[in-house]
Image (cartoon, rainbow, N blue to C red; front, side, top):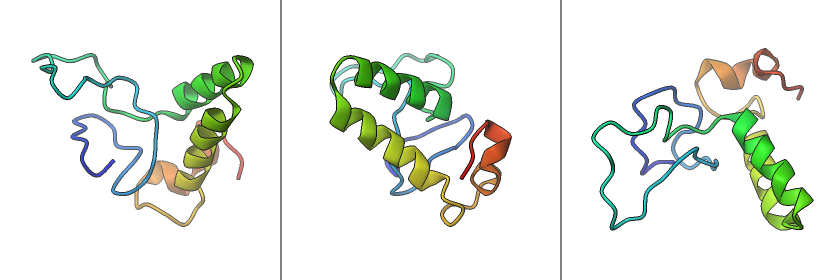
Length: 93
């Protein structure tokens, strides 16, 4: 996530992995006013995408997403509040 400019809430930083809500092709021009929260990673969206992937036979991709979320909320990495209190966001570690 180091190369992503996120003007909203930051739930992924530096070398952490995450599934962004929205992105644009490299050659496409990003809208002046993009979709709100476009560059964010949010566990609810990530888990929903992983569940859909499991249902459609994309097990490897789904597990990669879930592993990335769990790594962000391991209680060791990051300096942001949500990582220090994952239960606040409905997660148990």
